[in-house]
Image 1: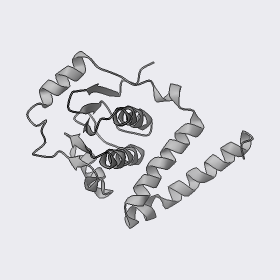
Image 2 (image 1 turned 180 degrees about the horizontal axis):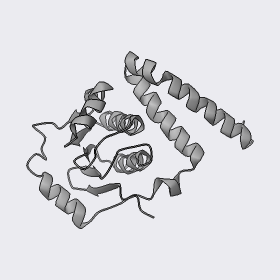
Image 3 (image 1 turned 90 degrees about the horizontal axis):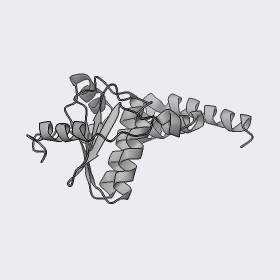
Length: 182
């Protein structure tokens, strides 16, 4: 089954990922997978289109930050197109504007948004539903990774997400003990 909350299209010059609905812990593994595949294939420019996204949670933002770090290390960049006021404020409050360009006025795709979105709708690529590709332990690991990425960005985030990460780590240890992996 497909996860239609995210659709994407690889153009000649970039990967365009559109979030239709809230960017959250449920669809963030798909975002990571789409972008990781693109970067591993040699791509280096990603646009995350939030025009139809009313808001983003911390896991989605941590995933986006992790993608941006990988992209930057490959000599590329991540840009965010058309975020809501709320989504933009959330990203800026956690410092994502230091890693991603949020609605950059000089972006090469400026003036082409309608054409890019039309191409996306004409031939939408959709990832597999995250629930089918990631189990509960995998999802917990993903959420932990996203929050550790946010923590590493600045002291404020470290203080904000420290307890969340400790709780998730304890949950992982408990799960591994229950499944005989510890």
